[in-house]
Image (cartoon, helix red, strand yellow):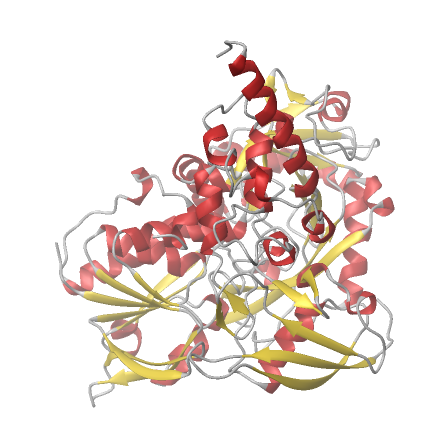
Length: 387
Length: 248
């Protein structure tokens, strides 16, 4: 077992999964997070455990990652997932034109699908648009965002990881030659400032990675890309409902507890610290969502919110950027030792993102311990709060 | 959402470490159709980065953002500003009661999680345990099935702690299991989980409740703990009577 000390910045999905993976591989782990667990993009995801079918035509790398991770998460964290499956439905001619490509893409990515007649689809989900033209079952699920993150954090904690919540990273510690050897932090709960030294700092701050790398004078090509989601006050389906077409606005409607959540839109911003919920985007969600489930129009809005995806690349419009992820070793990209940045990706692929990031950390430090997170069931999320 | 703008005074409870608690006022221009958490997040983003508050999902599935708003327990992500104040009005924002304050608006809810673990409250359960339609707390007769297989669903209880904060008994009896925990035991039922009787049939279990129904009044997630506690009492008595007559 290594006695290296790793500092993880960020306790969103990527950060908690990395903390868990590092702890399993014998690292001493400290997590620094400026809010509570999953308060940024991760908590505000709509909660779709992707089958990968959404990306099977245009972004097959993401699609394959999704289907593989979907199957793993069902096994290792069952108490955060409704495993009821999903449907892709066609409601107009343009959707039907997508049908062939969809079947082929899912086959290439090994995503199991089955075509239903409109009658069959309406029998299992009576609130779907009665004019639907065809439907496919997919192995989607719904997850509880906070509890998914907490389960990883709880397991990391039980393996020795230390979490500093409500604690901002205010600067990076350097060795005088620009290499990173720790973080300077400010605990806002007790207004104490202190330093933490480590052998490696992992920047897992998603859409905020640029705020951390800029402390080391580094730029990463990240495009913070928010989207608006709206929750409605009645549950109308058992399954996640997707529009059979290329990814677009308001094309996913999913059940959660006694709600339906419609998502999402896609626009660009500079600073992800505060993004307003744009009224015209909220209006678009009811417009698009009710094309899939007409009863949404008679359902009261329960909440409207936004989340900022960390998309890799800049200059390209949001939807055309791949949804896969990337881990940067800043020794290679910027000749700065001691700092690794992970960003991009999706909630569904959190475990894989952690595996690849920790593989990179292990390689850098000469640690030869394989990843076991795919086979390790997580403990109850409540154990994060209760020792 | 309208273009209407309101000016609202957020009077926010502040506390750091061992320091004295106090209130601080932030005057914000808001849309009345925004939610209270949007205002709190903007105070952090644009006025005072030292503010500590909890939040995650922003749509009432996680239970992290419970606070007292003008003295009433609210899940702030689904509480529209229009419904709790007026233009030029005040929003007094305080942490939940009956839990220790960590800082500002964040409390330590381990009391609740210990209890939920004690009754093995399921986070995901079969659809048949709690109906989606109607008001009743009894399982429904007809539950949709997935071709002979039961659907699973995330439990209604989001463990937000509002019920414990609102409960007049929880403040004086620290060992009281509290509404959410007893509701989780009722949901499973003593028939299905007979071992729970030992946990809930005691002075800090079902018998501690004074039937104030404040829990049901503030529950943002259709759990209806007050009625569930009453039903759990009936279940406990039924089990006792059965035992007196030599039943299992």
